[in-house]
Image 1 (tube, one colour):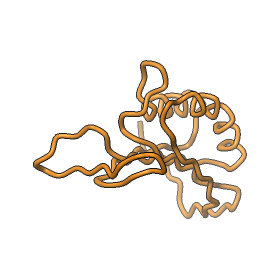
Image 2 (tube, helix red, strand yellow):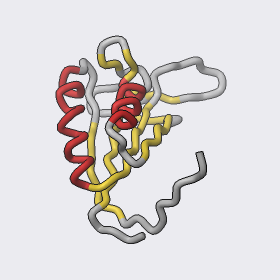
Image 3 (tube, helix red, strand yellow):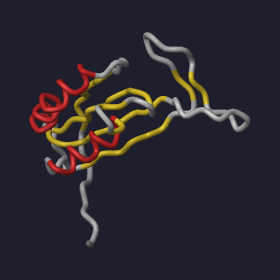
Image 4 (cartoon, helix red, strand yellow):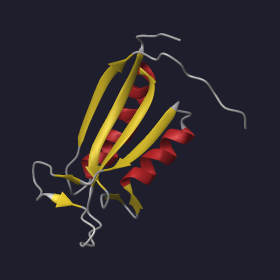
Length: 115
């Protein structure tokens, strides 16, 4: 299945970022599921920094909970634009910063598994 109308929405933030009482990445995954977005994956980084933060790193001798996180969301471009419109106010309310990018992709295969 090839379709240039698909995109990937990536949100770069921190594992400790919250929207109200909920972790940002949990909120986004749950909202995406509620809106029937095709797929979401959350990646936790081992090292990184943002515009207004120090370098965060995960080393086996350190116990740190603040690590970079990337939330990757794939669907049709129009659906991702609508989803971003939904989450943008929540992202703007956060005390910490984040980065959001939207990139076009070519879907080569989208096969559902058996439930």
